[in-house]
Image (cartoon, rainbow, N blue to C red; front, side):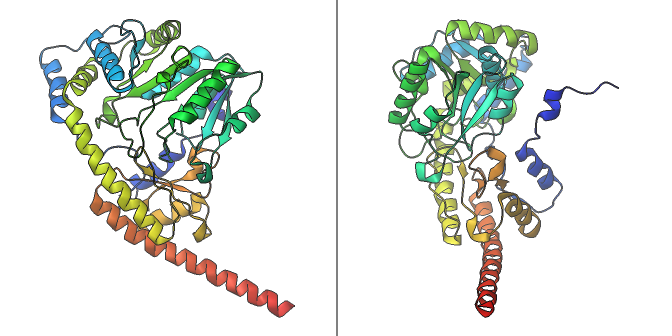
Length: 403
């Protein structure tokens, strides 16, 4: 039997999926691991899809997607960010942001081209670069810098093969947002070095502190930006797999070519639900936002009280506490917490450079579950902190006796 490709063999398994599999095989777990809203898709959106099926509207659409959907996406972006996109030639309906990311990489990268990727970041960023023949270049960020890359870091990572910068803000897993001033600096950097900007803004509507800046709204950015967004997070539509890409005409045309051969079109029922989301979904978005905001403050206060230092996330629905006090690695912490206290979190190492010493806790779950999880985590952290303290005391005693 022939071997599978070297590229497929080299691709690491998802660090998130590993823990999802462990959770699925363990009873009584409270999961703070899943990056998915715990709300049902609003009824009007579901009804639009059901109506589409009842009327027999179950065909392919244009490769670009339904024109009405693209028109509403264009209106949505203009209303929120004052950026104009031509719905006929600059917007593509995709199967989630994941497909949009894959298409973006495939159309801009030649073998060996490099993409600067601030980390910690979403688990699929580096693999998407790699699968397109590119080379991901990690830019480590830290809590001291609010998990944002600095211009000095970007300059230091730049090479003659650099083709693009990949940004994902609000951030999964850190909850960081990027202030407009920093985006303006990065846009100027991209202009200076003639780089593409790929911006994953799937959490744009979940920005609590400050204001989200759409990258393509910055002067000089639109002509070099591939903007990715979708319906999964703000509208609780993860399983519908509906996203969109906005890009300059030539870039989008190339994306559509690949899309037409691999996907053909996003599911028409999901597109109908997306149209309804942009027509009537705003009250539901605001209601879910308010719930996330309350949970955000609860989980960060609880983690900090336990002794796990945690900056207040400004966007998305993740907390990213430091776990140094336990003396455990991220992997050890996540595995032991799961088996000993039945609380699931994701080790920070799943998200690349800068993730060690952290775990990701999703607060897209009920307040009751968050409160119970915090009680269990306190017990767990106290146990390992006490063990670490006892070990340190013993080591000092032994060292003193030896002297």
